[in-house]
Length: 323
Image 1: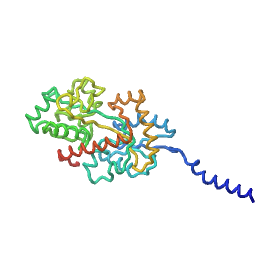
Image 2: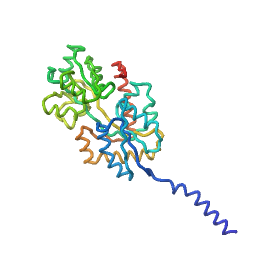
Image 3: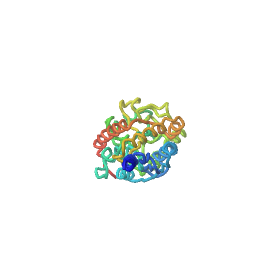
Image 4: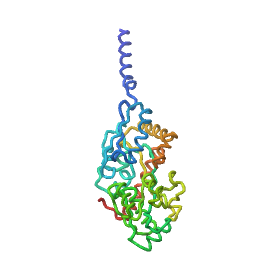
């Protein structure tokens, strides 16, 4: 009888402790990162640069899933509505996370209600670039010309609500000028318009403008970021060159569905921030005009909140509407 009781006690103990020992360690299958733009774009390039190292760190395949549409909002909403198990992540951008929620109140998600920050990935500087026919050589001269010719100068962008559009409207607001926005369907046609003189200036990704700048076809006058571009270190920032406090950069960051367990968020943050600090990875990202910006989930969440507030003011001041 005593042996039977001892046996039953052992079985009870084993049953009670089995689930804890059997609980699998994340991840046990492939992890998907949704890039809310088509293949080949800057967000896609950055994510694919990180993916092999993240796959090694997690011990599972990392799959890139391109889901373009609505300025990044389509892919962002997909992740916001996915299972919160750490297997569907987002390579989010300023557009989908900080701009679209204000610009389009009918979105199917609210950024910090439905998504959990993991870490910021990179910052991307824009360059204020002029067609050679525009008779200015600095930000101060550009502002003076715009004040002398209100509504006569124009700038192109890759579309309404994109980072370059917002940079232009922030300059209008801070400098008290009126440079007219001309939206295009992507960076390539906007750049073509500038090259042909169809528009006077652009605010565009460093990597896109650099070849034409080197060839002397376009004239750069400043970087929109708070710090100088590493690809064009001799170029002053807009803030340095005549509009103190101006800062407008593109940025990408990793997000997960909001109910994702904290230990999974912590694991992902640890691995991704470590990868971003690897010199080889940092050099590769810098070569495509993306500067690593790793940090904690809390830091990224606070940054997103500040960006939402900042651009909401610009959107209201410019009376921006969806195309």
